Image 1 (cartoon, one colour):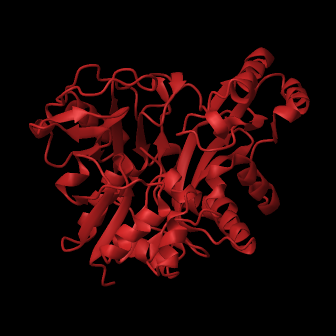
Image 2: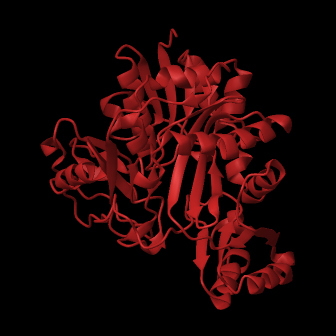
Length: 431
């Protein structure tokens, strides 16, 4: 497709995985990551940037004469990076700010689902002035509900409640104490669903959708899905209960395509990765949320299984030429385990030296997120989720054993990791 220069926007493990997959697609392509991290620096050029400065990112892309911009984080999409690039005539994989509202506003997403007939939980949205209506809905649900900040909250703006008192406290935290800042001035309250979760990525050109192998991530900080919500402590792909082609085709037909069609009919065609967070309930599949980008850490286990050049697919989306259907995937499974810093997901400690990466098996991947090199070239922690150790195998158990076997060789003070990634958990928890 004549792709010579690519700019990936972001600095996390997802962006490291995207850079790795782009390099695997072509050894000759020049890859830039803005701003990147210590891991991306090993296979691409890191370029200083503020991902929410849409004009600045577009200027970098123009000055570097890139052939494709790939948007990683939700904040970049919501800030209008795609809009700014399109104004410069630069092909971009990632939605406009208007289309990205499918993630940046949970109320908007629910409205789209209802209009398009996409199965989801019962819900009600409102702000401080709607407190009585929200409280009445909570009482109707007998407290079994989820309170979600309407806006972007780094994947943590969700409180799962089992009692009326807990739900009322969650409303107080969002609407009164502004626990999630402006993102929580408006909330969505929805019925609590139960069942295993599945994440499905659909790569779209605004009309067609190409689905990737499904994944399951683990949101809570501790084993057994206990403790605080995080951005994700690990993932596996594909989940054994959602691994069939028929499952993916059903998700595309009933969830992804209706959403893409509705956004296009509204005048906001969605170009990029539409992430559907699903729950497999006893009453059938329900959509928990849509995201407007590749998920993290699901990307770190999905892309190693992709059996076609990622760059070609992303450029086809940007050009409006992607083909409908299920993308080919390699046999087997992948498991990725996140190593998080001390204090995560709260007050994170930074600056601890990371050792042992040189001891990993050659075919085991280490996607870096919160890392940086110090003045002496030593790798140190620089964020909450530090690394994701990803291994493939003939099945989930084989991949899991290899991922944990290699994680054991990695060390930094305060390292936190779950021990049950890839195993069933007691109950799905909305993310």
